[in-house]
Length: 224
Image 1 (cartoon, rainbow, N blue to C red):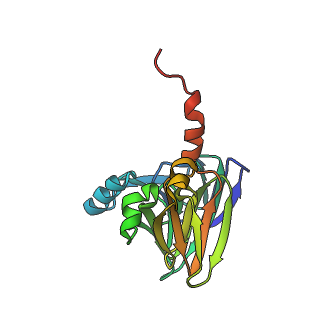
Image 2 (cartoon, rainbow, N blue to C red; image 1 turned 180 degrees about the vertical axis):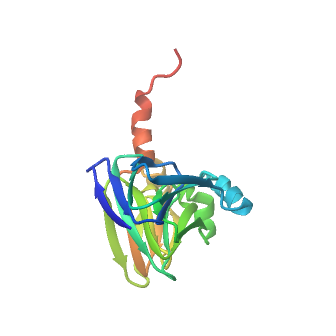
Image 3 (cartoon, rainbow, N blue to C red; image 1 turned 90 degrees about the vertical axis):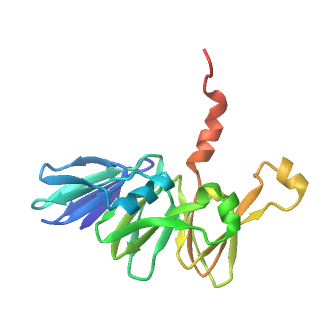
């Protein structure tokens, strides 16, 4: 599979497939393709379907297979970036639960739960995430732009929860209270922050979709 990412702030990824190669997507993100690409909708087994429903994801996936050399394009659902993730056995990557766009069928997608109670109780979107594993290329959506840091063992970064886009499976995630009652109540930064602890790379996004929703909510008409 060869690919090219285009589109600026409204990105697409164009994938060139050889005969028999397949791509998979959860969200029906295909925007155009050559007519020799066939589609099959699969559920992935009853257990996986229930786990996806629990996490708020679609219970079904679409598999696109080239019948001869072909092309298929996937589009993002929000202004930002489409980033390729190269996966190898033993090096999983964790992303926010809405980030997965498409991948080669050799990539496995599963639910990731934070191991720490704080993240489970207070992490919001950060509690249920997606784990990418296997051997191949996956494409993820980033809200806004992307900043990457490589954390050394024990090195930490404190992040607003919505800005966490992804991290290596070797990175530990926890949720901490904003220190000080006055800071928490009047600081405007919420009550909790996410702490990411290395070793491993972390991906931070600059414009979480939830922040956009909160910004435009006062301007949405209500009632009649």
